[in-house]
Image (cartoon, rainbow, N blue to C red; front, side, top):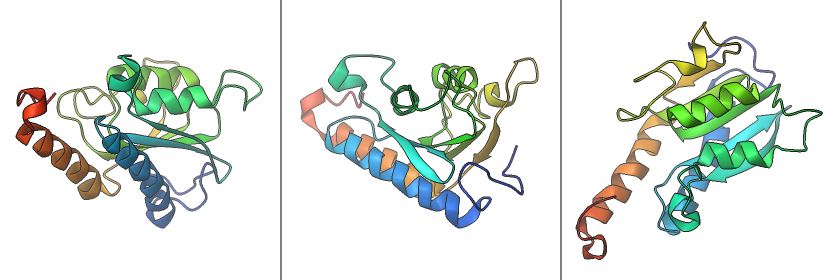
Length: 173
């Protein structure tokens, strides 16, 4: 699915508004990279304002669930009348994995905008289409490829530097 004609979560559909919010997600990804984490960042927007930010922290927290999307979703707790994160859009630099896509569906986020596809774990469109699967009780509007080159280059640069560094034995993990 691609962006529609109306975006209650962030204002104007697609275009400049999506790019502006994706730049905020990219800022989070850069912070993750500075902390030695894989550079993935996310923000959640509701009614035109950023209500949560997240970045990958799997290494520092020693937690396999500490993905950018999960961190942002957890930050929304208490901001809504229930566990539902309705009338919200999630912007993330890398296509969500199956775990994050499941959490997005379960939290009822309306819209997901991501930067680059994930050929190894993408669950929005690349390997699976969990966010738009008609068999599930909730579906999200999905827009892919927003600032794709910038998001992809962050990841490539990070792993290129990691492979060149002797500190991890060249594993590039």
